[in-house]
Image (tube, rainbow, N blue to C red; front, side, top):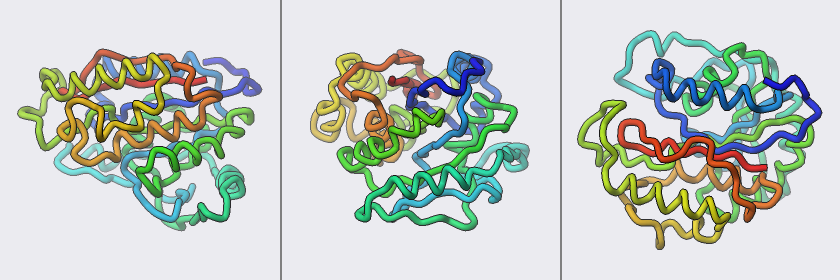
Length: 262
């Protein structure tokens, strides 16, 4: 990992998987290598699919992790990820939002698995302040505007991360195995999104309800797709294609495609 904290940080959209991701040597290795290639962040601001809350809310640094899953081994419910205080970043984020986007400082909510599972792999030392921000809407335009408001943080060394899953049709999966074949709806949506990302076609990506193949099976609910628009909003130019760091790969039949934008 680069130790240069003066470099402008990119913004990321990552697939966060589920707790068993921590035991997957392939995907966890990809995430760890990705983090190694990045400059070292001064702090991390992450928006996860698993915190939908309006008005926009910010996590509490001293709060315990949120174990927002069920049916997994007990050890996952005993994991910790105690990071340094992120109060200064929370204050900075609140000051960046307009009056039309009020910010609530949550007193007791910690990081959910959409945040701590991938970050535990990417930054295992837990020595970087982490702030989680809720998603107050699924409207692509409004999420991109929030991302644009946050963009200056990148010049301060803050890594902005949208954490979701490019396809997330869990009710339509026939088997729950890491190596399970991807259903047609998952492959079709992934290919469509990958091509739009390669063109930097934000309008196409935002029109997914009308234009994307594989819907609504790929996203019967859209919370795992929506964080992408915070990432695109935080980009220097959302129409400039980003680097698709993980692509054309699936986990339990769901798309792992992940993006880095400058």
